[in-house]
Image 1: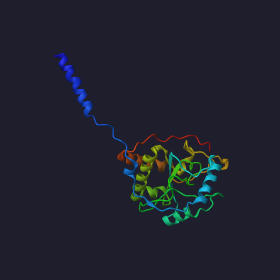
Image 2: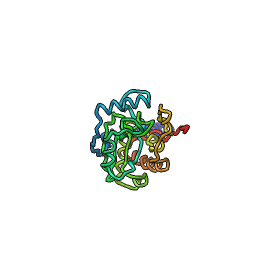
Image 3: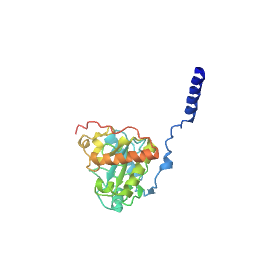
Image 4: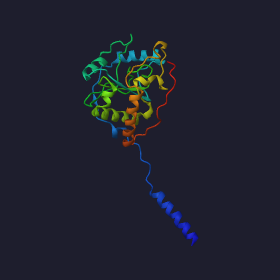
Length: 236
């Protein structure tokens, strides 16, 4: 009787194991890609050469290519119109005395439309010390609070960022605000006079709210979260 009971228990455990659901596979990036409008800014051979020279001066490698990005940097334009931001990025005007001009890979309008401005295989100059490994997302607006309160923009931004996490294996903790870049372990700037330069957009408090919402969206979509924020001493 005792042996039959043990045998029944073993069989039961085997059956339960056989019926246990397999771990869910992460989604294929194309399955969760949001609607994106291609709104290309001029980025021809001359601007690519300028980007390669900039990369050599500031990161120690002469290339315009963005390979295996590890960070997403969140920005806002400090303006009220998509058109003015697009024109500013397209102009390729010198910034801090250097070309190429500033740009971002994506620009999200106030109605939630996601515009892609630059191919993801190209470096954009959007955050000092980070352009070698960061995708830049700009939001039309004059404050993070304004954007956090715009449901259409936030829905688009979080879905876009979750897709980038899935596509490149970026951790949710490496989705950072422009104001947080100096504390990122990926920050790398060879120009000593620029090493501590940053912007005030999307500070730590604002990004805590953004990342909390991002985690919920990523979990709902089945996107692996990876590690949380990892901060280093900036020395600034």
